[in-house]
Each structure stands twice: as structure tokens, then as C-alpha cells.
Image 1 (cartoon, one colour):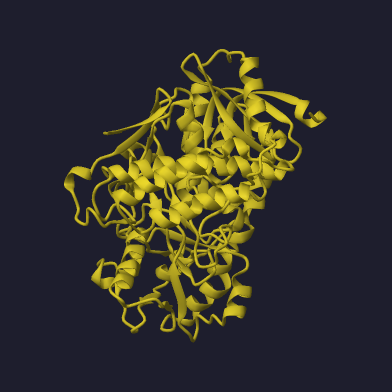
Image 2 (cartoon, one colour; image 1 turned 90 degrees about the horizontal axis):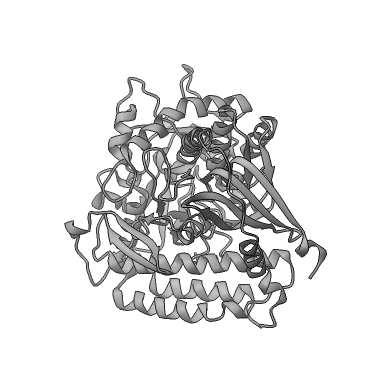
Length: 548
């Protein structure tokens, strides 16, 4: 065993923030403002990690102006539904945090686009009743600005540490274990409270036309740790049946951009040149994202595509310029190279688009104080987009800081538990097996592509469970050669667990409705009895599904 593998670092903090993306940064800001010691941990580097590490072109801002549907009450009514698990009190706190977070981001140098009269330039999109999306200029450069300010605030940061286990003792959250993905050094963290902000989506689940799982619609470094770590620790997870997501992508690009394209007024066309979304939703392309995907797929089933296109030729020149020069590059920095190679011209030509890869989500259940079913473990993610992540993290961080102030001490860590976890984590380095992480993960994607696509049925999903179980039999055969491969192996194992839970939940959701992105061929009609919240919880080592 190398010297690095023998090295164990111990840390203690009042509030532990797990994840350095927008949500984790929001949580760290709130804890720091509350005067509590905070330690922020991420397997990447703070300056580039998280969903916003690659850029973002919009921030959702409900500003309580005289504009239609521009109040927090409007937002609460829109987001608090029986099947998404969001409590009205938590949505309200998201809205209440918006002005402070917008001011904070402006102070660090984030450029929100303004109208000629000095107001924020906002667009409407994806089913929302009002113009809530504030456009961002040069959004691909904002994460280093946020990270610089976080460090200047005195937040302690552990870069490059992958969390592998949450510690729960005496019925409450007490810490976490992880290792440095660059050198293998093990880290033991004790805390009074923690905020879970490890990314809302599990990606690399399926492939798009690029056949490259890293050329994905959403950040490819998230494989479900946010849910699986919480599930293994005993937390309740909801919405695994309904929070599966995809989007419409520029053909072979792997980055959405649809919020900007539809918000500016772009039209979706089938191969006959017909603008078709009006058949499926009165808001057409500005319908909820998953219904936009459903509409595209229904056109495909009807034989009207592919190809499909986005038409931006009739937009005003300034909208075309903003899309080409600001919003699309803000989502992915290689947009201009892609446009040049593919001949994309938003001023004069149709742009071919396609349905992208599937991503999996859920919701770690929380109460009105953002506390999960594990006392002391607060949840920073679960709301929509950059705004929801950062404001949700901020609200969760405030509650975590307040509770930490009422906790006198932190229980000691069980050294045997530490050693057991350390050996489990390092096992692939010393394995004599022959299965590589790339093979293991590719097999998972193949199963999900076959049986968990946009049309699925119970027979196929049960076959998926059987196939995933066969892949799981190879986990002790995984072998790696270095620290990077070790990280990828553990991401693949997390991905496997996430897929298993989602398949189980999808089997139980026996309907096709506007609440899901997929069509059940064996249950093609909506069922009002399914308009409830599905919960998954680990009981006696096995997942238990029940309805709330």
C-alpha cells in the first residue's frame, strides 16, 4: 500500500457543504454570512466544478414588479404540485433569496443583460406563466468569479475530494468520508450539520447521436451521488419516476441552448416544414421542457421526422446576434467551432435539432426548513436551474447554520468504520480482476438505451433490472491502474445504483401523462391515481417504494 493510501486527514467544521456547484456555493455564502465555520468539499476544483462550471446563459428571477405573473405567489403556484415534492414554503424561500443572490452575483462581476430603461432583460420559457429568465452575458466565465469571492469570504475548501459515504450516528448526520482523486489521501470530516449539494442529475445514463457519453446535454461528471449517498444513509428519495429529463439539442452538439432559442422566439419545425408544437401544448416551443421532448417524439412516431429543425430566421437581428454570440457560447464554449464545422447560421438557415440523451433526477425529501429525513442533513438542490440551485443552497445553508448553533458537540468517528470504507474505496486498485470501468459503464448505458428509452413497458424494464443485476455481479472484478480510473470506477458504481432505483420507480408508475418525459406503451393513458408522490427508502438493505 502506497504512502498516499496510508495518509488520513481529519477535519472538523460546524457546517459541511457537500458539492461546490451553484447550490454548494449558495449554501457556503449563507453559512459564512451567519458567522459559522463552513467547509466546502468537491471532487473537482471550485473554480470549474458544478453545472455552472461550463457556463450558463440564464438566471431565473421573479422580481415582484408590475409585470404579469411576476410575484413569489405566482411562482409558488407554478412549482408546488402533487408530483414534484416541492413544499410551498421551500419554493417561497427560493423566491425570497433571489434579490440577494442577484445582487451578490452582480457584485462579483456577473453581467445580467439590461433593457434600455435599465431593467433586467427577461424572457419566458418552458411552461412558466411569466417572463422569469434574466439573460446573462459571458456566462461561461462566471464560475471563477464566484469561486474567488467564496475563497475571499474565508470559506475553507477541499478541492478534488470525492465523498463516498455519509456518517450518521445517534440518529443524526455527523460527517462524511472521502478520498482525494489526485493522490488517494483519505479524508474524515466531522460536522454538526451538512448541506447536500452534489448535483441534481445523473448523466452518462444514455447516449445521443455523438455516441460520446461526455458530450452530454448536462454536466457529465454527475452520476447520482447526491441521491445514492443519501439513500444509503437512510434518507427518503422522491420523484425518481417523474424527474427523468432530456432536452432538444442542436444535432450532434450535446448542449441544450433551448432556453435561449425558444425564449427568443425560435420555432420548431418537422421535416415537412410545419411548426408542430401547437398540437401538443398551447405554449408551443415554450411548453415545459419534457413536453417539448414528448412533442418531438410524437412527431417522429407519426413519421414527420427526423430531421427536425429550429427556425430563427424571422427573429430580429439583435436576437439572432445575442443567440449566436452570447447565449449559445454561454452554454458551451465550443459553440462557434461547432457552428463553423456544421455550417450553422442562425441568421439565414434552419438548424437541425434532435432529442438528446436521458438524464435521471429525483428529490431528496426535505421539510420546510430544507432538512431531510436524516436530522442535520439539509438539502440544497431540487429546484430548477442555476437560480434554483444557488437560491435553494442559500436557503438550506441558512437553516443548517441555525441548527448548528444549537448543537454542542460532534460525536467521535468509529475508526473501524473509517478503515472499512477506506478499504472498500481502494479495492479496485488492488483487484486481480479484468473488468475495466469503461466496460462496466458502457454496459449500463446499453441496458438503459434498450429498455429505458422514451417509450418503455414493464416487460422491458424488468429485463433491464435483470441485466443491471448481471452487471452488478462484476463490481468486485473491477480493476483500475490509477487515481483517475478509481474515481471513474466509483462513479460507475454510483450510476448503477441510481439506474436500478429509477427502473424500479418507473415500473410502478403505470401511466402515460404530462408528468413524465416517457411514454408507457403498456399504459398509454393518464391515470389520476398516479397523481401522487412516490418515495423510495432503504429498509433492511432493500429499496422500499411507497406513495405519499
